[in-house]
Length: 187
Image 1 (cartoon, rainbow, N blue to C red):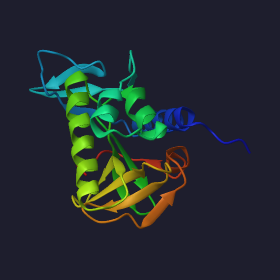
Image 2 (image 1 turned 180 degrees about the vertical axis):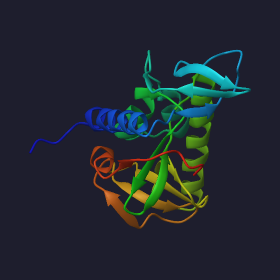
Image 3 (image 1 turned 90 degrees about the horizontal axis):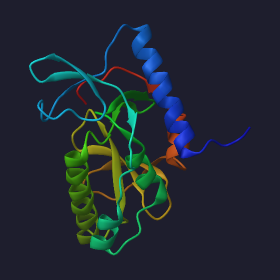
């Protein structure tokens, strides 16, 4: 059995998610941050600020060199690739540990906010003298995120402010194979 790359496993999950939504007659929806300036992934306005969207490849891919320079740290290649592959509003998924939402970059302004949040998160981990992690998904519990351990690329369930303990996968690529598509439930 061959091992899929991160890009391949993420694309497979996105394809499964789009098929699942179509089979269940559901539309990927999000609140548009700036209705006058559509995001690259935005398809159409549904009502007020609600829009339909679909994951779309970033062109050009997001650059994280500013984050790495600010932190004097090289981010794990998986986390940089994950956040620089697609524009989107986030994908709902089910995992054996519960529901989650994979984070995505909506547009350039959202990328800047994400990068600021990554810097803040890593600075917090340093202040707490904990291994550096980068979050990539939310759970239905505001105090628990899914993160990549920066030094290894392993995926962990992380209670915010605590050291990671519960390993879920050896890599993001392996983690995506553990997911089942689900509707976004406001996690």
